[in-house]
Amino acid sequence: MKLNRTALAVLLLAALALGCGTAGIATSSRESYRGDRLERIEGRVALLPVTEADARTIGSLDAPSRAISAPYSDPIIDRGESVRFNAGTGPDRVNHVASDILLEKLRAMARGIEVIPPRRLESVVGRSAARAAFLELRRTYRHLGADPGLLRRLAGVTGCRYLLVPQLVVISNVNDSHRSFVWSFGKRTSSYSVILLGDLWDLSAGELAWSGRGVASTRVGTYEAPAFFDDLAALAAEEFVRALPATGPRATK
Image 1 (cartoon, one colour):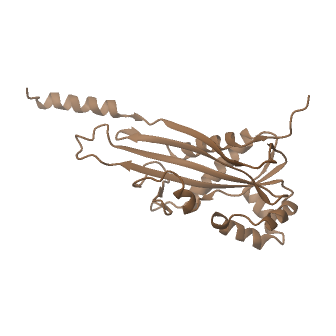
Image 2: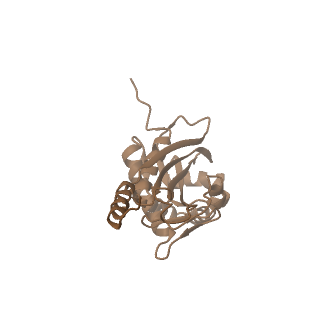
Image 3: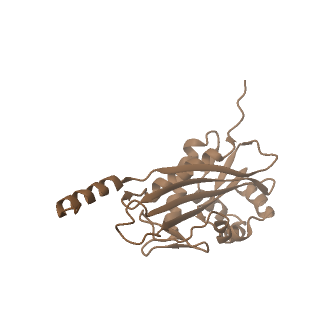
C-alpha cells in the first residue's frame, strides 16, 4: 500500500515530535585519593583558577572515538591529545566561567571553611617574595605537580592551610554510524561531558591531601536540545564539592 504525500508528511511530523525534547543530565562524583591524616578540611582554603587538564590526565579518562563541535555555548573539543576551542571562543573565558561557578558552589556548600578566591590569592602572593615561584607553579602544575618547598612557603604567605587546584575537561563525542537521514531517525546521538578534577594540597606538610572529581554528562538525540555549558559546569562543580571530605571544625557536644 502506497502512502500519499499528506500521510507521509503526517508521519514525518509525528517522528519529529517524538524526537524533540531536552536531554537529561547524569552526574557522578568520585574520590580518587585521600591521605591518611586527612579527616576533615578545617581552616582557610586558597583556590587557584580553573585550568584545562593535562593531556595525560585526559587520556586516562574514557576518550571519545571522534570529537565534534558541541552545540552548547562555548564548547571545548577533546581529541585525546589537547583541548581545542571553536572560533570566537577560548580557554580563558571557559575557565573563567568554571572558576566563578566552583567558587560559588564552595561558598554555598562547603560550610565552616573560608575559601580565598583566585584573584585575592594572586594579589597576596604577588606582593611577596614567592611571586616568581608561584607563577611557575601556575605554568607547570599540570605537567609537574607542586613543589613541597613552595607549598610550605605559601602557607606562611597566605595564612592558608590548604591549596585547591582545579582542572577542567570537556568532552564532546558523536555517534555518526548512520547511512542516511531517514535511517538515522532517533539513532544519531552526541554525548557531552564536563569533568571537574581537583587536587587539595596540605600547605604546611607540603603534600597532597586529597584528589577527586565531579562529572556532568548528557546524551543528545538528533532533535533534542542539549544543555548549556554553564548548566553542566554547575552540576559538575556540585558533584565535586560533594566528593570533598567534611568541612569545618568537628561538632562538639
